[in-house]
Length: 151
Image 1 (cartoon, rainbow, N blue to C red):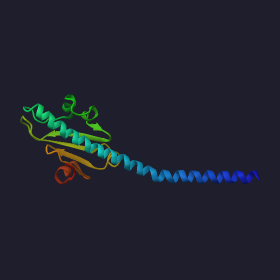
Image 2: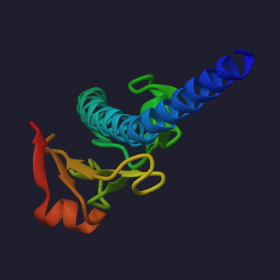
Image 3: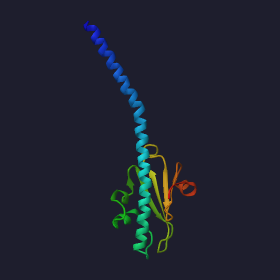
Image 4: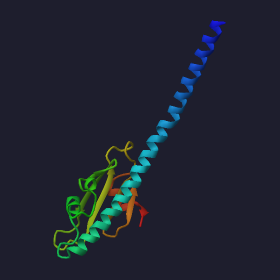
C-alpha cells in the first residue's frame, strides 16, 4: 500500500513539473513580447515629449530655436532626467540639428532599441513637424519611408 502512494505522488509531481514547464514555454515569449511592446509605446511617448519640449524651448528662446542635444532640454527641465541622458526603458534617443545657423528651425530625433529584438523591434523618428514615424529597418528608412504611428 505504501508503494502505491509513493508512485501516485511521483506521478503527480512529474505531471506538475510538466505543467509548469509547459506554462513557462508559453509564458516567457509572451512576457518578452509584452515588454518589447511596452518599451515601444514608451519610446513613442518619449518622442512626443521631446517634440513638445523642443517647441516650448524654441518659443522661450526664439533667437536659438530648437536645441541640438537632449541634455539642453533636460537642463531646462522640459524632459525627464533619464530621457535627457539619451536612454529610457530599453531605447536609446538621439537628436540632431538640420541647420547650422541660428535660430535653428529644424531638428531630427531618433529612438532605437538598445538591443534589437530584445528591448524593442521598431525604430522611431520625428522632426519639427511632430509626426512620429516607425520603421522595422533602420534610422534612415524611418525618415524616408517610415510609417506614421502618431500625429
